[in-house]
Image (cartoon, rainbow, N blue to C red):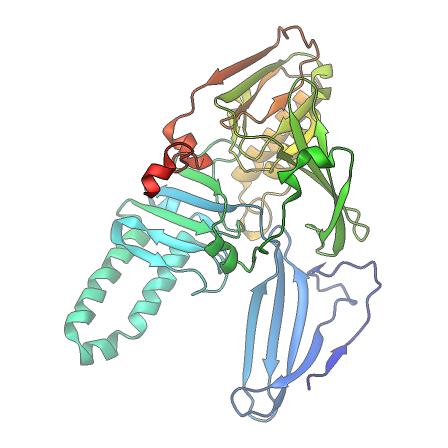
Length: 444
């Protein structure tokens, strides 16, 4: 029987995962008496639930056995699984691209199509590294068994030597290649050194997980369970509540959900989470309708501070751009939001400047800090009314909205365009493989 010893009991309001700090005397590991798999005597496992700043929650476990002296240390992810999976595709052209930093979780798949190279999911532990570090780790793993292969099968050893040479050329930046990370949990990340500007070499795609991917990340669907979004007409006057965990401190919290009719637009589902432990508040918006036949692009010329009070509905499929700042925020970033233009600009500044994991600590550089700080100052100038700019919402699904204060008349400073989606946009929305007519004949 395992015996659990808590060195100190924390108050009920304390977060489950605390920021890692050597000065926090209350942060003590929990000890569990457990079986040693080396000598089968009882040893001791120590667990520390902590949070790495600007990364995510982790569980640090350390096992020691006093009988045989065997020890083992492991780090497991305890971060929140995102609503959508994410796929990063980077065109690596030189040594600088090879040095880009990468956050790779254990559920992520890493590919290099040019050499038919793939690291499957759940074969490596999550790591904060670089593309060069991933390639170097692969080279070392292949070289480890080469002496044995040369003795048993020289042909296999020669082929692996050739493959190692290819990896070495990629690592040195001599050969261009495509680096792909596909993470169903949505927690992997590839650095954009040009932030807050768009990186032409980096493509970020957010997608809905398949059933197999849900199973991989530990999410199982319940058969027969009905989604409240399926019958919005029955729930217009009700506020539903379900239990979840706080995305900030991971403590138990409650999420409220309600269907709202936006004037001159459509129905949306608003979800708000309030955490009593750390005070964190967040809201998310889901579209209550279908994908529109045409995409929508809304352009607003911000000329007065009163424009910042306009309501904004940004769906998960909507991208945001500010041409004067050469800034573009891709679809999926920030999720769905129902806020004001001022609130959305503050969220953009917080995401790009304040919470950028590569602007603090050892991974930061002075040039990168200055560039992002300058971007933050320009956002502040727009918020203070000292700088005019164009704000563009581009939603291929047509489910985003920017308030027209002159409605039902036209707004002289706002332009709304409808456009035909491209093949790539339909692919991102999952429409190319969707057939709603004549599918009975195909089935026959």
